[in-house]
Amino acid sequence: MDEGVQGVSDIYKLAYESALAGIAIADLQGNLCKVNPAFTDMWGYDEDEVIDQPVTDFWADPAKAASVAEDVIEHGEWEGTLVAETKDGNTFEAQASASVVTNEDGEPAYIMSSFIDISELASRERELQHKNEQLEQFASAISHDLRNPLNVVQGRIELAQTEHESDHLSEAASALERAQAILDDVLTLAREGEELGETEPVDLAMVTNTCWRVS
Image (cartoon, rainbow, N blue to C red; front, side, top):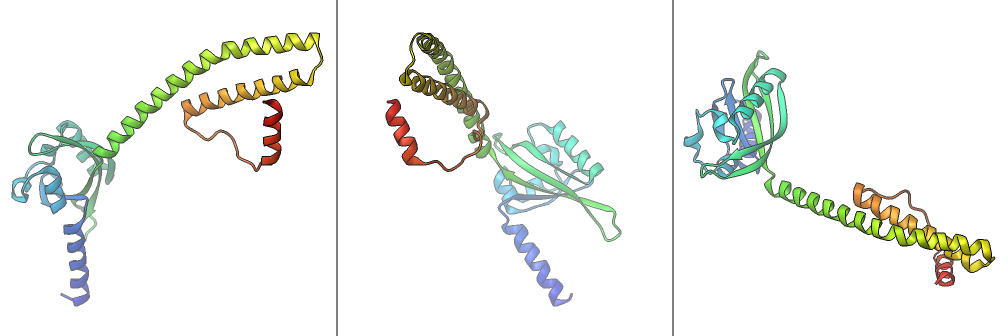
């Protein structure tokens, strides 16, 4: 074999064996032919325990795993998440990607798959979603509780403005509108988790003086 080809082969072998992701090679019948050390570490098996075993044996839902294998053969590739089952019966969520590898004639020869344990990330995402739901509930309750007194204040200001002309009432009305806008923004942020509009430079001295006059 050419030394250059041999060198490339060695690099691929080193990458395969040292990869942090679990890598598995299966035949078109769905039986494992070869796995790298990361795969055996993730599932808790020795290599000789998994070779020639059906790929469906390593997933909590064998029927779904079989369906994924069929999709890979039919479409050439697949990517998604699956729940893996380890040797000791524990489970973990895995981000999986698989593709068909062809031979020199361009015909499907085997399936190569890679797996990353995303259990911790998925757990954090679920925890964050739960906290966001709690935040939305809290913001909704606060919004509901504050709108009634704010509406009362607005009505009183409007009534006072019909009886008296005063810059104080105008400034109070402006401050109230600002408070209601802030309340709407907080509720929108809690529900959607998005940035509220566009940002722009402001004159800090002017804002400070305005706030001082309102207070």
